[in-house]
Length: 361
Image (cartoon, rainbow, N blue to C red):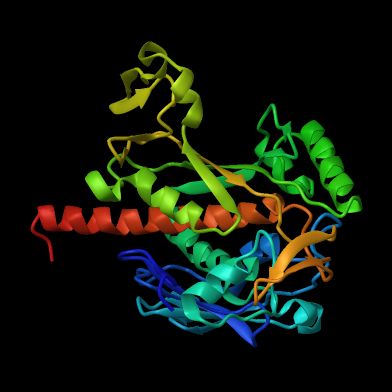
């Protein structure tokens, strides 16, 4: 299927549908000798899996990962790594009544328009279930980045109009909203619960920060680092906008405020502010890389909605089944994974460039 592969030297290809037997991913370009266990991947999948709290979908998938190739005696072999996650908690009958209906906010019509057919069971390939494969691949990318001293942290910056006012990394995994602010987290959860009780849903903003990145990642013109990151984050179905650094706020700044003043410390070039989000000219500066993603409210809600059927006749639907009233908390590990995939790819590209520049083979 076109569009199911991502990356240049560190590449991934995902496969599978929401209600098929399994979903999975093939990860190629992973350097040999990286320590990797199924538990490393499982730890990330557990952060994304459904049924983990009262504010997520009650679909109770264990998301147990199986490593089928590319790892031997807990080390990567430098060969393609294939990962499989079986779908165990499918209830396709929930979608029978909707199989000939184009639901508002979903990809039902566009998939039919493109392919002539569609999998109506839970959205098939367009389902958020596919993102589990990205998290699995991202766990491997994080292992590669860790060997280079690079780490990634994501959190819910805003949900339902409630915005965190401080960032305490230790707080993020303590609350179901994955917010870095304990007081804001309580209000975020309340907003989600109120929407759920009303049969509705809410969106929000996720922030993802990479630290320890060396200067020089990313390439001029079309493969600018921010362009690759925007591509990666926007490929997540629920994301409707991406900003880097100060983002859209720069439109209200003067250049004297926006420009990040550089200075040298211990032989390293730093900046006093980070409005550019750690990227200048499409290339990493060595500062923290900061991106934010606007995440829409989930499209599957239990309120009555107007729709049309496959013949174009108007109808009214009321979606049942098991759905998230807010995607943001479970999207955090997905967005971290996409940033990790981009940065791992850029690291390998840069290292290959450096070898070539020095005539190494």
